[in-house]
Length: 268
Length: 352
Image 1 (cartoon, rainbow over the protein chains, first blue to last red):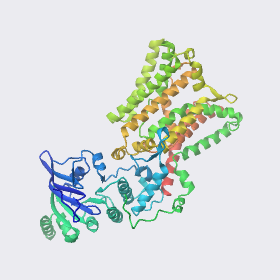
Image 2 (image 1 turned 90 degrees about the vertical axis):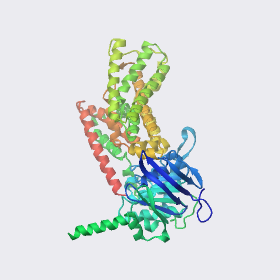
Image 3 (image 1 turned 60 degrees about the vertical axis):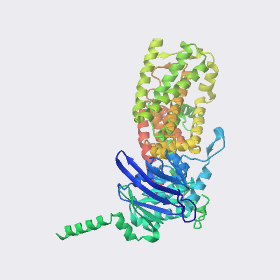
Image 4 (image 1 turned 135 degrees about the vertical axis):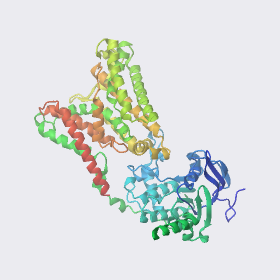
């Protein structure tokens, strides 16, 4: 039975008791979570927590072994990345799938080039591509100086913006961002966090995967904490403080033990 | 998306674009260096070969343009292939293979020349497919795969020619039915007074078509991405393998076309024809701004590169120097052009 969000409509995306095994290694166990349109869902977890497995199930790279995944209340099972994209689930990977030597507008439409004319005269609609790329970047709040600029000359944050704007333009309703801030400096990370909020304002359900609670806290509407393949916490923004997130992320009691141990080391 | 963003910035006004100066725009083009180089080489020979009236005599122009077309035609697909991230070292020897095949079909099997030409082009496409398919499937460097093709074809050319004719060449292709029109189309002179070869028109036409495909079509976008970052391209749905195979097929087919044109022009074919020319095609492409690592370059630049080679081959002789210096000159041009291209690109990318 599909659950609903507060307004009676089904959740945009829903995981119900989803598990995934690799042989007898447990990658995800009994994971349940909801993603709603216009909200940022942060998935927090340390290395090996199961974040990558989760992304890969969502993007159609892996199939889950147990449980149910629903989009708009309908059960789905993505068997290929193309399948997921068709259902409106777009993933922006860390490498961003962009070609550094190519211009912004060429990258924006790479693989989905708009054409005009027919038959042998069919050609890439360049003026449309340039105009659209610039407009959609502007909607993300980024004013590109020149759409002919190679993507390789953009900053890390701007490159993320191109990737996000591209996913939105091509009809993403669920946007999965895999560690978009982890390779960035403090200022650039702030810029990307603003794009994440922008994307949610566009009515997209954003899944923000990160291991950094300080990046997640300011933008997230709700927070799912993963550890060793299980959900160890699911909080709405109102019900949690930044300190609590940091503590749970670090493993709560384990952190206390570690602190004690380190203090012991320092004292001796 | 239909959602309206209340905070959306207004569309950037156009004067922001004008901030990128025209000079920077021109310098950013991959073919600018080749154009400057071609002008410089032209001026050099205008001085050193002034006794033949290098700059003013259309007959001199036609001589070096005919020579340049010789490299320019095959340099066009070689440049596309390099932008697509691959090499073809067998493009030179393909000229010999296809010319010899044409000779065998017309003089040994006594075919009409037109079906023979069709078969030779198909042969070129097939060899290109084998090159491309092997590279894509084995993921070996194309340098190695096509080096293998190069040596296999080289041996085949010599071996098969001796076996069939007992000599090192095939002659009398002009006795084939239909030769007259083929000669008109592939090897005639278009401006008889100054002896411009029809090959110059083929060169010009192929360059225009390829430049259009590269800059203005979906396939052009795929070529850039296949060379620039094949993994990223595949992740967004670009058929990278198909793109690369098609580029290999185009390269071999154009080399076969040039083999046909050479055979028709000479009315015969030597079994060692074309060997070593692959490097001149690559030089033309690299001088034209193609990066060896792929993802960047220009077909128009490759045409300028071929023009430089054509001028060098004629200009050195016209200046009264020994023709062996042509190789030396080409080597200097290659290194100088790559340094110039790199410097221009770095400057342009800083000054954005």
